[in-house]
Length: 256
Image (tube, rainbow, N blue to C red; front, side, top):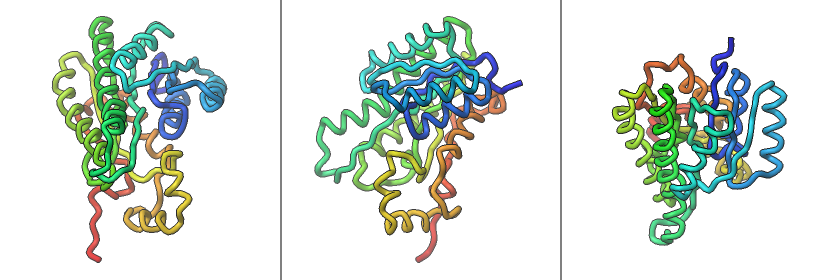
Protein backbone atom coordinates (compact mmCIF):
# COMPACT_ATOMS: atom_id res chain seq x y z
CA UNK A 1 0.00 0.00 0.00
CA UNK A 2 1.43 3.37 -1.05
CA UNK A 3 1.32 6.28 1.42
CA UNK A 4 -0.63 8.42 -1.06
CA UNK A 5 -3.03 5.88 -2.55
CA UNK A 6 -6.17 7.71 -3.82
CA UNK A 7 -4.64 11.10 -2.94
CA UNK A 8 -4.33 14.08 -5.26
CA UNK A 9 -1.75 16.86 -4.92
CA UNK A 10 -1.38 20.28 -6.52
CA UNK A 11 2.24 21.43 -6.66
CA UNK A 12 2.82 25.01 -7.75
CA UNK A 13 5.98 25.94 -9.64
CA UNK A 14 6.63 22.31 -10.51
CA UNK A 15 8.23 22.51 -13.96
CA UNK A 16 11.73 21.99 -12.59
CA UNK A 17 13.94 21.81 -9.50
CA UNK A 18 12.40 21.12 -6.10
CA UNK A 19 8.81 21.29 -7.37
CA UNK A 20 9.44 18.65 -10.03
CA UNK A 21 11.23 16.44 -7.47
CA UNK A 22 8.23 16.71 -5.12
CA UNK A 23 5.87 15.72 -7.95
CA UNK A 24 7.95 12.63 -8.77
CA UNK A 25 8.35 11.61 -5.12
CA UNK A 26 4.63 11.80 -4.37
CA UNK A 27 3.78 10.03 -7.65
CA UNK A 28 6.20 7.22 -6.75
CA UNK A 29 4.21 6.78 -3.54
CA UNK A 30 0.84 6.57 -5.30
CA UNK A 31 -0.30 10.21 -5.59
CA UNK A 32 -2.02 11.68 -8.65
CA UNK A 33 -0.44 15.00 -9.55
CA UNK A 34 -1.47 18.42 -10.82
CA UNK A 35 1.57 20.32 -12.03
CA UNK A 36 1.74 24.08 -12.43
CA UNK A 37 3.96 26.68 -14.00
CA UNK A 38 3.91 30.01 -15.80
CA UNK A 39 3.82 28.19 -19.11
CA UNK A 40 3.71 24.62 -20.34
CA UNK A 41 6.92 23.69 -22.15
CA UNK A 42 9.21 20.71 -22.76
CA UNK A 43 10.06 20.47 -19.04
CA UNK A 44 6.39 19.94 -18.23
CA UNK A 45 6.04 17.47 -21.08
CA UNK A 46 8.92 15.36 -19.79
CA UNK A 47 7.59 15.43 -16.23
CA UNK A 48 4.14 14.35 -17.38
CA UNK A 49 5.69 11.43 -19.26
CA UNK A 50 7.76 10.41 -16.21
CA UNK A 51 4.73 10.53 -13.90
CA UNK A 52 2.57 8.56 -16.35
CA UNK A 53 5.35 5.96 -16.47
CA UNK A 54 4.82 5.57 -12.72
CA UNK A 55 1.19 4.71 -13.44
CA UNK A 56 -0.25 7.92 -12.03
CA UNK A 57 -2.73 10.43 -13.42
CA UNK A 58 -1.24 13.85 -14.11
CA UNK A 59 -2.06 17.19 -15.74
CA UNK A 60 -0.46 20.62 -16.04
CA UNK A 61 -2.20 23.95 -15.34
CA UNK A 62 -0.72 27.31 -16.29
CA UNK A 63 -1.06 30.21 -13.84
CA UNK A 64 0.71 33.41 -12.77
CA UNK A 65 0.61 33.14 -8.99
CA UNK A 66 1.59 36.76 -8.37
CA UNK A 67 -2.12 37.60 -8.79
CA UNK A 68 -4.64 36.65 -6.11
CA UNK A 69 -7.47 35.82 -8.51
CA UNK A 70 -5.15 33.60 -10.58
CA UNK A 71 -4.06 31.77 -7.41
CA UNK A 72 -7.67 31.19 -6.38
CA UNK A 73 -8.60 30.03 -9.88
CA UNK A 74 -5.67 27.61 -10.03
CA UNK A 75 -6.92 25.76 -6.96
CA UNK A 76 -10.49 25.72 -8.29
CA UNK A 77 -9.27 24.41 -11.66
CA UNK A 78 -7.10 21.81 -9.93
CA UNK A 79 -10.06 20.48 -7.95
CA UNK A 80 -12.07 20.22 -11.18
CA UNK A 81 -9.42 18.08 -12.93
CA UNK A 82 -9.90 14.90 -10.87
CA UNK A 83 -12.85 16.08 -8.75
CA UNK A 84 -10.85 16.09 -5.55
CA UNK A 85 -7.77 17.61 -3.86
CA UNK A 86 -5.97 16.49 -0.70
CA UNK A 87 -2.55 18.13 -0.70
CA UNK A 88 -1.43 21.65 -1.62
CA UNK A 89 2.30 22.25 -2.01
CA UNK A 90 3.10 25.94 -2.48
CA UNK A 91 6.47 25.69 -4.18
CA UNK A 92 6.40 28.56 -6.71
CA UNK A 93 8.77 31.35 -5.77
CA UNK A 94 11.08 34.01 -7.18
CA UNK A 95 14.07 36.00 -5.99
CA UNK A 96 15.64 39.22 -7.29
CA UNK A 97 19.15 40.27 -6.37
CA UNK A 98 19.70 43.96 -5.64
CA UNK A 99 21.13 46.03 -2.83
CA UNK A 100 18.38 47.39 -0.59
CA UNK A 101 19.00 50.92 -1.90
CA UNK A 102 18.36 49.83 -5.48
CA UNK A 103 15.26 47.64 -5.11
CA UNK A 104 12.48 48.83 -7.42
CA UNK A 105 8.79 48.73 -6.57
CA UNK A 106 8.27 46.43 -9.55
CA UNK A 107 10.78 43.87 -8.27
CA UNK A 108 9.51 44.17 -4.70
CA UNK A 109 5.94 43.54 -5.86
CA UNK A 110 6.93 40.56 -7.99
CA UNK A 111 8.76 38.87 -5.11
CA UNK A 112 6.20 39.62 -2.39
CA UNK A 113 3.19 38.85 -4.59
CA UNK A 114 4.57 35.53 -5.84
CA UNK A 115 6.13 34.31 -2.60
CA UNK A 116 3.52 35.50 -0.12
CA UNK A 117 0.30 36.86 -1.63
CA UNK A 118 -0.09 34.03 -4.14
CA UNK A 119 0.54 31.45 -1.42
CA UNK A 120 -1.94 33.19 0.90
CA UNK A 121 -4.78 33.02 -1.61
CA UNK A 122 -3.94 29.50 -2.83
CA UNK A 123 -4.30 28.35 0.78
CA UNK A 124 -7.53 30.31 1.27
CA UNK A 125 -9.08 28.73 -1.82
CA UNK A 126 -7.94 25.25 -0.76
CA UNK A 127 -9.28 25.69 2.78
CA UNK A 128 -12.67 26.81 1.48
CA UNK A 129 -12.80 23.63 -0.60
CA UNK A 130 -11.68 21.41 2.31
CA UNK A 131 -14.33 22.87 4.61
CA UNK A 132 -17.12 22.53 2.05
CA UNK A 133 -16.10 18.98 1.13
CA UNK A 134 -15.10 17.89 4.65
CA UNK A 135 -11.60 16.99 3.45
CA UNK A 136 -8.73 16.78 5.95
CA UNK A 137 -6.30 18.78 3.82
CA UNK A 138 -2.56 19.20 4.11
CA UNK A 139 -0.61 22.33 3.11
CA UNK A 140 3.17 22.50 2.68
CA UNK A 141 4.85 25.81 1.89
CA UNK A 142 8.31 25.94 0.37
CA UNK A 143 10.00 28.51 2.54
CA UNK A 144 13.77 28.98 2.85
CA UNK A 145 16.48 29.15 5.47
CA UNK A 146 16.06 32.88 4.86
CA UNK A 147 12.84 32.89 6.87
CA UNK A 148 15.37 32.75 9.70
CA UNK A 149 18.79 34.00 8.54
CA UNK A 150 19.86 37.17 6.73
CA UNK A 151 20.64 37.25 3.00
CA UNK A 152 22.12 40.65 2.08
CA UNK A 153 20.98 41.99 -1.31
CA UNK A 154 17.78 39.92 -1.15
CA UNK A 155 15.73 42.02 1.30
CA UNK A 156 12.34 41.49 -0.38
CA UNK A 157 12.95 37.75 -0.63
CA UNK A 158 13.81 37.52 3.08
CA UNK A 159 10.74 39.60 3.97
CA UNK A 160 8.53 37.28 1.91
CA UNK A 161 9.90 34.15 3.58
CA UNK A 162 9.73 35.73 7.04
CA UNK A 163 6.08 36.52 6.30
CA UNK A 164 5.52 32.93 5.21
CA UNK A 165 6.94 31.69 8.51
CA UNK A 166 4.40 33.70 10.51
CA UNK A 167 1.55 32.94 8.11
CA UNK A 168 2.16 29.23 8.67
CA UNK A 169 2.35 29.61 12.45
CA UNK A 170 -0.88 31.59 12.47
CA UNK A 171 -2.80 29.31 10.12
CA UNK A 172 -1.78 26.20 12.06
CA UNK A 173 -3.97 27.54 14.88
CA UNK A 174 -6.77 28.80 12.65
CA UNK A 175 -7.02 25.68 10.50
CA UNK A 176 -6.63 22.99 13.16
CA UNK A 177 -10.40 22.95 13.94
CA UNK A 178 -10.97 21.94 10.28
CA UNK A 179 -8.40 19.13 10.54
CA UNK A 180 -6.07 20.93 8.11
CA UNK A 181 -2.33 20.77 8.80
CA UNK A 182 0.15 23.34 7.48
CA UNK A 183 3.95 23.33 7.62
CA UNK A 184 6.97 24.95 5.98
CA UNK A 185 9.97 23.27 4.45
CA UNK A 186 13.06 25.48 4.43
CA UNK A 187 15.76 24.36 2.00
CA UNK A 188 19.31 25.62 2.35
CA UNK A 189 21.85 25.47 -0.48
CA UNK A 190 20.31 23.03 -2.97
CA UNK A 191 21.56 22.13 -6.44
CA UNK A 192 18.73 23.55 -8.58
CA UNK A 193 18.44 25.69 -11.74
CA UNK A 194 17.90 28.80 -9.54
CA UNK A 195 21.42 28.26 -8.12
CA UNK A 196 23.14 27.62 -11.47
CA UNK A 197 25.41 30.69 -11.20
CA UNK A 198 26.66 29.51 -7.81
CA UNK A 199 27.18 25.96 -9.08
CA UNK A 200 29.26 27.31 -11.96
CA UNK A 201 31.44 29.46 -9.66
CA UNK A 202 33.87 26.99 -8.07
CA UNK A 203 35.40 29.49 -5.63
CA UNK A 204 32.04 30.78 -4.39
CA UNK A 205 30.65 27.24 -4.20
CA UNK A 206 33.57 26.12 -2.02
CA UNK A 207 32.90 29.01 0.42
CA UNK A 208 29.26 27.99 0.71
CA UNK A 209 30.12 24.32 1.26
CA UNK A 210 32.64 25.21 3.99
CA UNK A 211 29.75 26.91 5.84
CA UNK A 212 27.62 23.74 5.79
CA UNK A 213 28.34 21.18 8.53
CA UNK A 214 27.51 18.25 6.22
CA UNK A 215 29.96 19.73 3.68
CA UNK A 216 27.86 19.33 0.54
CA UNK A 217 25.10 21.02 -1.41
CA UNK A 218 21.66 19.52 -0.91
CA UNK A 219 19.89 17.52 -3.61
CA UNK A 220 16.30 18.15 -4.65
CA UNK A 221 15.53 14.63 -3.43
CA UNK A 222 16.65 15.64 0.08
CA UNK A 223 13.87 18.23 0.07
CA UNK A 224 11.17 16.12 -1.60
CA UNK A 225 11.66 13.35 0.99
CA UNK A 226 10.77 15.76 3.82
CA UNK A 227 7.82 17.17 1.82
CA UNK A 228 6.51 13.62 1.32
CA UNK A 229 6.76 12.96 5.06
CA UNK A 230 4.86 16.15 5.94
CA UNK A 231 2.19 15.43 3.32
CA UNK A 232 1.62 11.94 4.68
CA UNK A 233 -0.23 10.55 7.69
CA UNK A 234 3.18 9.84 9.22
CA UNK A 235 3.14 13.55 10.12
CA UNK A 236 -0.44 13.51 11.45
CA UNK A 237 0.58 15.36 14.64
CA UNK A 238 2.82 17.93 12.93
CA UNK A 239 1.50 21.41 12.18
CA UNK A 240 2.85 24.97 12.39
CA UNK A 241 6.46 23.85 12.05
CA UNK A 242 9.36 24.65 9.76
CA UNK A 243 11.56 21.74 8.75
CA UNK A 244 15.05 22.86 7.74
CA UNK A 245 16.68 20.85 4.97
CA UNK A 246 20.01 22.63 5.04
CA UNK A 247 22.82 20.28 6.09
CA UNK A 248 22.97 22.15 9.40
CA UNK A 249 23.59 25.57 7.82
CA UNK A 250 21.00 27.69 9.63
CA UNK A 251 22.26 27.34 13.18
CA UNK A 252 25.90 26.64 12.34
CA UNK A 253 28.50 29.04 13.62
CA UNK A 254 32.27 28.61 13.81
CA UNK A 255 34.83 30.90 15.38
CA UNK A 256 37.22 31.94 12.63
